[in-house]
Length: 89
Image (cartoon, rainbow, N blue to C red; front, side):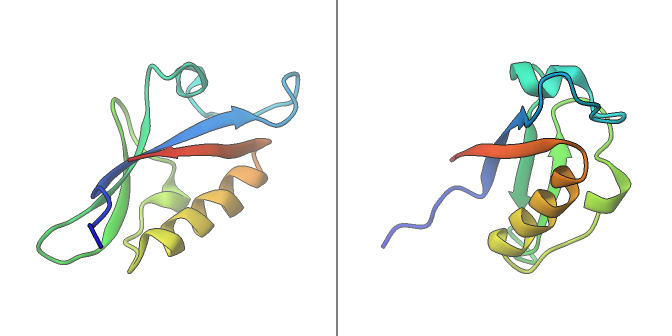
């Protein structure tokens, strides 16, 4: 079985288009500032990064698996009126 990519893009979408998303960069929803989940090859820990800018503080941790990172992101974004609609390898 082949290893999936160590750099995965989380595609985000507003749940309610008119709802507030806080201080999330609007370019995230247009694919112009992607949110990446990246695995460090040396430690095998996952973290988040944007193409440009800082990741929100609750997502600046390290995770032992992609699944744990995604669950944390889903929980955080649910509170911000955002959902993850796709993961691109």
